[in-house]
Length: 382
Image (cartoon, rainbow, N blue to C red):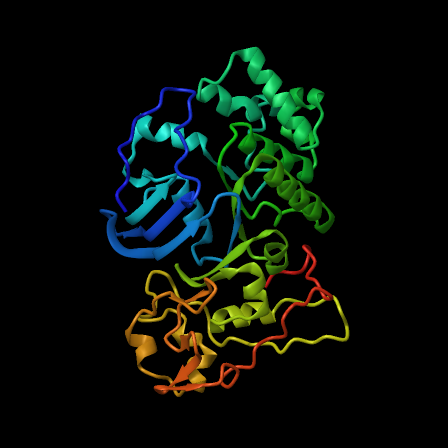
């Protein structure tokens, strides 16, 4: 994709949006490797392949859920989208502009349009700064409005997230965990961003508070037209808030589909295992668990080919075909924009030993979540 020429906006202004039909964010072949240093001279002795060849689009106004085990690269993807860390390779087009090529003053206007809600509501706030100053810091940095206008905007945003104007003079230690996360949300939204990275924003909160924060995020999205990337472990939370879901495993996307389609029918063996771990709040319904063997490989020395092949029950059912360890499976569209990275998943079903077989022959799919048996936002993590 050829990016249009960039005209650096002046301080306090926003770049003009691109065409309405274009995705807000287009990620292509994104790679991030962190060096592992050792020895007296601290030379690079290895690489942590945190993200390795990730591609996806984020549509305007949607919520894209990123799920997977700890260490699969979800948070790293979010930080790469915000340019908090620089990618090793690949491109990130935000509103038609390749922001991986931008530096300093050229990047600053786009930082205003991308914000993050951090996981820990306790560590993400400066304990020495009143929360009104913390929320308005972005306005000051980008030179938006006078001091009085900034105070008024902070007060409006605090009211929008359920805080009172007089709370602006208080310090973080005077608030509960749920209130602190509301402060973090207000700080992220005060700049009127287009994209918000929600990095496990409810994982540190009680179940009752989780529901309040999730409902607040959905209400603000409807009111302000926000686009979310929602990083989470809890599949119940992801089902509650997401429009589409991307499942990551060891730095790569294993499956990407519409939320309803993914929870109705899982194509990748890893997604099957994740879904089978979700409890259903109905004693009459039981899932067939898919128990994975072995541990998650190290991203310093990941397996060749498909990174899931050492633990894959489908590969074992098919007699351990060599292609799984030899070639990286591409993301294939199985229909209805349901993408899956598996050599033996095709639009016609499951392909085994060169001949198609029925989709449910190698692995029995887990019981889908029906509207009559919803997953609650507070369900335990997968």
